[in-house]
Length: 219
Image 1 (cartoon, rainbow, N blue to C red):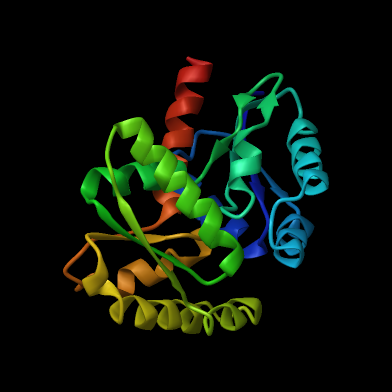
Image 2: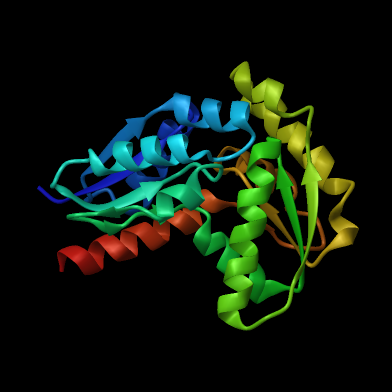
């Protein structure tokens, strides 16, 4: 059976993406892989070390031959995941690439907001790569919402999203578009619908890209 396989580093993302899959493509069989240690180790090291990159690769390559498409939903390890080529599914997709491409298309001043400092650099590098591929110059304004993550760790999503939204409101005048660097931040976008600039999150855009790749691979 051809499957869409998703690698997560936070349990909440399993719920988020399972719900989106039921909405967008209930016919596609999916498998959710969860490994919180990959994000924990990236945060502890402050970077993706060679040893951690090897573990990420091993985790993804261990996905079975029934995987038609592999999607990494963690932005912190997304760059390393995208370097992995699975023998059946091909190059691993990262959930935030479609969002980065949309942001580059929407404006030149891009605000990158994160609740974890470890996600800022990977997202910045991704947006710069997307801009280079599009032949466009962009400036990036990084925003860390330091008080938000503790709510997420306690499982209090409403408080988490509210803290992120409050942070975004204080920064909205600095750019043309806001990028939410972590998939878990997506709920904050709905709280900022009245802002004068778009607020982009990765789950829906990234999953739509993965679904399109799945359709093409299994046609």
